[in-house]
Image 1 (tube, rainbow, N blue to C red):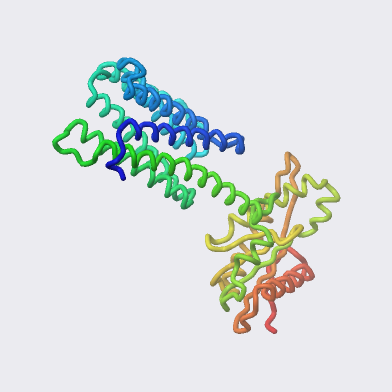
Image 2 (cartoon, rainbow, N blue to C red):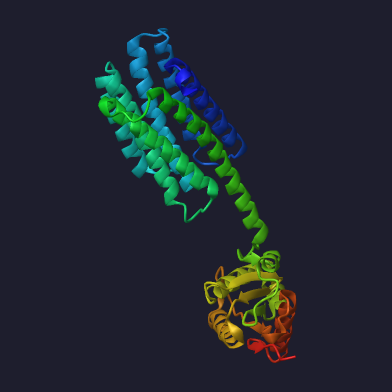
Length: 379
């Protein structure tokens, strides 16, 4: 099939791939106003579409050789620069500063100056074009992979792989142009594969945006909006339905919280909840899970802690909360918490029962003076 394609047809197909990509990125921007990276990607694909059009007109003899030879390369350089910039902004999720824009403009300017020197040499012109493509795509794959640990999305990995393959193909074409005796890929085949990859880039950019949106919705669904910790729904869905005997649950309640709201107002009460959640989160272990249970109550799942270790962690939390008053915009409020701790032991009860045991221990802590940690009594 590939052998039946001529260069002019492939260039036309390439232009179509850039137009489809341009439309995809414009659509993404229109439906995601806060999306970063779509505008430079759209600009890059638009520039590439213009460059492909000039190259096609040149192949068909519609425009003068000087216009299409120089114009296609200049638009190509601008296009690849914008594509790399778009991939970086999309990957980072924030605008790029002068430290990136200035070097990028300098590299693009040097490439344009070089283009004026080699415009009438087909091999050198093609080598420059594909060199810029290889640099843009390989650098784009690099920035996508660099953020993989912070955002481990499958679509990010796929997009990085696609852009990396595009860069390697362009690099192979570059070598074939500079060293024709060692050519490793047919020019028409290379353009055809790049066309397929252009469609794939547009597709996986859209998939990355969709996967990010889905992930944000999931985080919102599982997070308490006031304190930023997990919510009760997440706790009972994500934690083991039947905890191990050594796993512990801890229920925490802010003492006299209603009095704080009545005396200082709900805004101060919200500040107290936020600060208490922050202090609790800073006092637990890395594998422990904190969630807001409801109102002024929090719950913690402590895998493998056992009752003694859990009680020690509870004392650490209690001290962290009671040690310093909470600063609420200049108003300082003293806060203490009561804590109930429970483990299932040999009972092997379910998570809801374990939470009820911790609740009974919390009731004991409150009835015995508050600002203390109490363990659940053996049945």
